Image (cartoon, rainbow, N blue to C red):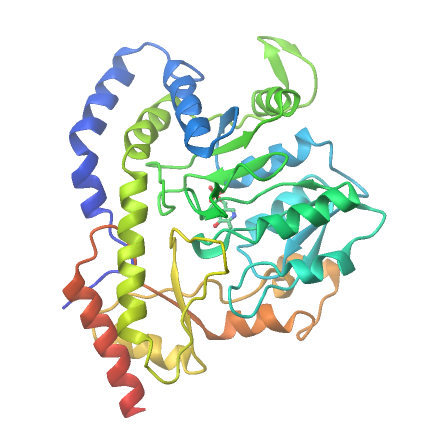
Length: 369
Ligand SMILES: *Cc1c(COP(=O)(O)O)cnc(C)c1O
């Protein structure tokens, strides 16, 4: 059996006729940037996120950058970020001229540990930037309490967890202003780069809309030095189609995760994903941990099973961040996660017999090695 790490086949089959119709409409619309499709998708995604406003932008990294700019965060400011995340979270902070201040994750959930955030707060801290990693919502109530106590903004990096919840509240609705990504592989993926910002705050929404479009609200009148980072009409039309399927696709990811859990819970040698009390995950990734990670990955590859490592090098040890001067050992939990994590195939349409094939292969590996 050959099982890729990620396949769009089943998702594409669900949406193909509607996508084709949307594309035809797009060509004939005679309007290709910031038109009716973007407006419609923004309204739909705001409804999905239970926020008053959504601003479509070019990609997830820009979404975080624009959210930080809307908050006037820049040179001399500090932003608290997880030590364990995709580097985009940190890069956004650096791009606005602020400094990312890492906080370790909980060992079990791999999400930022609310108990460690306060020790990282200084007079320069302006915001907390939690990441709902692998699709699991962070412990947002604890994070919100800390932010309120210290007068800090929250910017959610919701690139991986569209539709996940904490005590019934959906991601993208907790923070002051929040960012998400529609990179093709994300739970809600475009057919190219795309992203969005969600917020309840009217002033921040309008500032973000201005920043994404050259700092201009009225054509050729520029209030500030903005960016060009607009969600385009074609992707917005596609995303409107796919958004209707997102709840059922997220459910299917939960079916797969439950099957993995059932099949692997007694397997010695691996640690399974843990979801915090009151939180849910939309399983963007199903990431297990094992000391024999590299050998297991090689074995599964030989059995025809695609896997990935999220992520092999934590941001503080990347060459891109030598200037911060962190040495190996500075953030041991993030480093341990980077050394032991292995993401198994998870995507809507992955069949039960395929999951069983994968879990059997993992069990066989640990019995024989
Ligand atoms: C994908 C991702 C981003 C960036 O999104 P792009 O659309 O690729 O720019 C940011 N943060 C996290 C956690 C991500 O997974």
